[in-house]
Image (cartoon, rainbow, N blue to C red; front, side, top):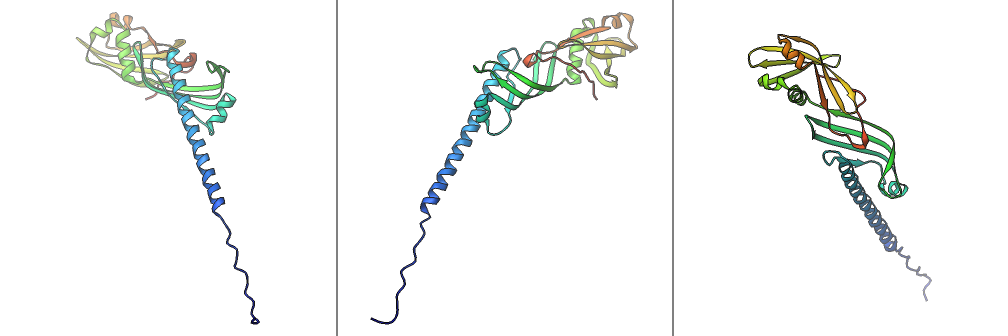
Length: 226
């Protein structure tokens, strides 16, 4: 035997089981995330259908916020739900956009009802829609207005001025938009120019019913903006 000693071969660390475990964990997380998004999409569609079935004129868009969704579903409490819809028709007025934010939505055990801690929202009605509604609701005014109709503009203090071309004369009228009750607005005539008394008396007060809003919402604050 020689005086040299041979060392044992170095052990090779086996990392394959660790890598396999990591891949399995990633796949499981991916499946859970996919299930979370799928469950959210189903819940949003069901909620939108429920809103429509309770009297809203059309199916709105619903977005449930917060992650993960499945833990919120298990607790039957959603952090935030956003609701939006556009071109909502009913009666003489079409609401251009409706947006609402629901915070703290508590769902009943049977998932058929619930309560909301706080809800805020807004509804936007364009001047052309108000113009059409005024002509529809004003009776004689609708038949007198020419093809150009009413051209509305904001004059402040929640007032709108309508320039109109009647069949035989031209003039203008200024209405103040106020809330009567619930989802009904009133256009109260506060001034006019160039219009005969027969016309102004017919348009002195015009009621503008609005579409029904979801969750029994009612209008609290009316603002006229340019």
